[in-house]
Amino acid sequence: MDPEMNKLLKWSITNSDASKGAEDEGNAVDASKSQITPELISKLFGGGPSDADLMKAAIEVIKDPETDLENKLVAFDNFEQLIEGIDNAMNIQSLNLWPDLVSLLEHEETDIRRMAAWSVGTAVQNNPKTQAHFVDTHSFPKLVSIATTDPNPATRKKGVYALSSAVRNHQPSLDELLKSLPAPYQNLPADYKQQLKDEKKSEEEQAKPLDASNMDFIDFMMDKLRTHTVDASA
Image 1: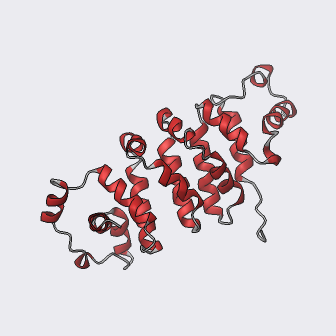
Image 2: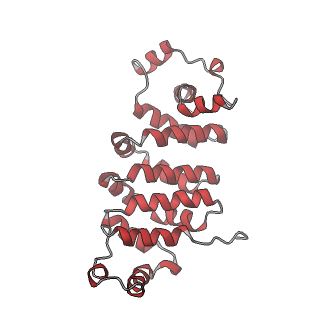
Image 3: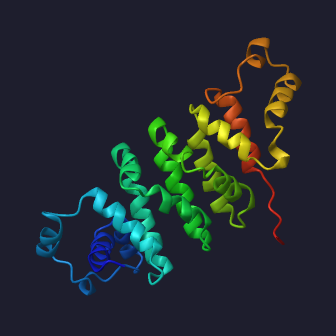
């Protein structure tokens, strides 16, 4: 890892809400071991690291094979909190971080996959531009795999969250999701129509298009994925 990025990570961890919370439980990162001083931060980053600097540093840490899982997760938590802001979510594209982020959806550690899916969901939520950026990564099959096959229920839950955020009010994303669904779910549109008939919904409700603006249809799909049964022996 770039030594300056490593210093920035330590600064970020020491000053993050996550490490403050850990301190309350006796698990804080020891700030005295960090060699990070206000003068060094000012020298490196002209007064302090920008959000873009912190985002890049977090991804570098997560990718670094020499960083332990605990610190990778702290870095990922910092990253996810940063991209709650619309401007920072947009910066994923400008900083060319989408390839790294979507590659982490297939990481060997389920907690890393969970955080990657969570971050995708946060980045694309109510943001048509980042929804379009995610479509361009062609990564819907990865999210579908997490949502339907990951052995960790918490990771599957974040996979569904990411899919839900990605497709709402964004038709290209919904089209990609429908193409990526495994065989048992290919008939979801027809199943939804049948449910409306079985529940004797009004003709007006039955006539609503099954597109990305139909929140009832989206919720129906997500509920089906959320209740997917995973073979524990697989």
